[in-house]
Length: 472
Image (tube, rainbow, N blue to C red; front, side):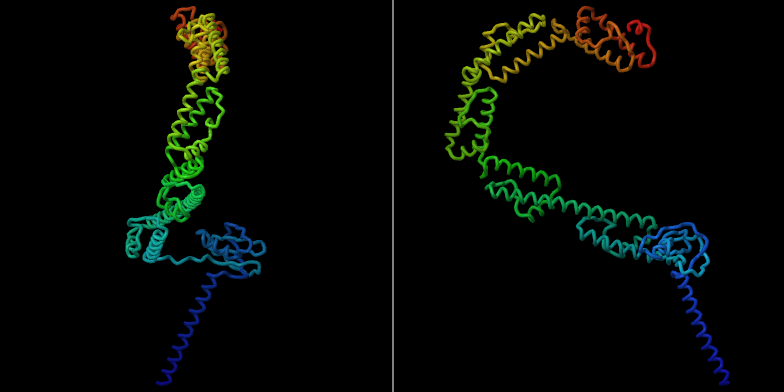
């Protein structure tokens, strides 16, 4: 009985050991099948040949097979660095040139494992949202793991992918915007620092720009406002600084600013009328006028403006300064008289005080006005006479002017379309059309206009009317 028990126990121990060894060998063989096999080549089933990058090795070929759902096995050929992907598990043979293997199939995750990863990622994305101060809120943006986990269980795989993608895109936009704002505010703070330094060196008190100061203050002010507000602030600060530098630095005094601007206007008026003033009070420097105002009493400032005004009145009353003004008015009166004679000679029909042939009256008017008014009056008469000459003389006829302009336009259409109509009524001379119009009735003028229009329409369609050919 004891011997039988010993035999039974011995057989049991042997059986257990044999089972353990079998499991070990099966596991080893399975792992070897799954892992890369050195000095092995698999022949047959090739569907793709890939060039392996230098230095990548057989791992690159193994990863390529794992990422392709068609691939079942692979072979890496060392000498040519070639990767062959196979559509089935091809039989292996010994070869020192190659490394082969079978595609590893990843274990499929359960729904709860997928949702655990989803919830962890959602919490990480919320932490990133808070860290970057993006300000995203709502059901999709919170740090509650269980809430994201339960929501994931109720979603489809597509909904999970879209939600993760949506949060990633939002965080990417936030990061891009943050970098843009940082670059913008860095430039803003550097510019503000330069403006502040220049204002301090020139004793300019820019009271309307409290954000000016050191770099940190300007940078913080920029982060609290939008791009438009920041650009407006810099533009206003530059204008204030430019005005301060133009007046020579120092605080702004409205009385002296008004005086300097008035002095510049008076100087410009004297220059346009060729008054010829050369003393120190006549200059176009805003800074000199402003600095002079700071050194004198307000009564002196007012007196200086009045002195310049009286000088301008005397200059305008003489039509200029002394002999130069008389020469200019003599030239003006002669030209005006000549223009008046041209008006009568060409029978232009221009009437009014400016078209009188009296030399003395033109000279008297010139002596009471400025150079600008003289020149504008001459230009006006010249333009009116040019219009009269273009239509061949005679009083202005608005209807014939419209007819001539339209006739010239129709002739140009005729040339552009290649219709090649020629003759008495087909030319580009405004004067000839205008003169013909003044000699005929309105009915005939209108009929001729309609005939040309009809001829051009038929030419555009590809055929010609008989009366159109007769007038070629």
